[in-house]
Length: 214
Image (tube, rainbow, N blue to C red; front, side, top):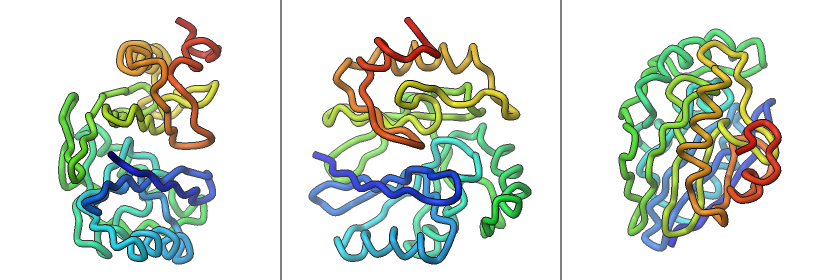
């Protein structure tokens, strides 16, 4: 069974997650560490628990979810995986980072590994299933841990809210369809770990999320 550790990083209060199991293999979801102090927090947990990072995963290409890509690649010699359609957002993120006081270290913005819908990522003895959930951004994905009943939604679905759709590449109807067809079809007791804010459940969002009522 997977275990989880979360961190809140950068000026956007972005949630970065470390997912690991008893084999000590781990993946880093949305490395948003933007300062040496935040990098120390992330690396300190990984190193103190003797974890073995095997992959970093971007749920989408916005700057607050990707600014730490190079830091984790250099520290652990791992690759960054994402959907192919995030590439334009990664290029925009390079230009945007200085406006938010963040240092963009990722000279090569392209992901190392391209993920596809329904692909399965192995983490030790556990798995994460890739769910394509565009609408907040092009190439947005969610990651579903079937055995644990968790889903990591990036900025697609929040507690009582949804991701903004007024950025380049965003579309409200596309996002609502992604949520209804890929997320609201998961079991109601599935825990939702979002890219910002507190966790929730699929059942609660189906009942109480005004933005995407069933």
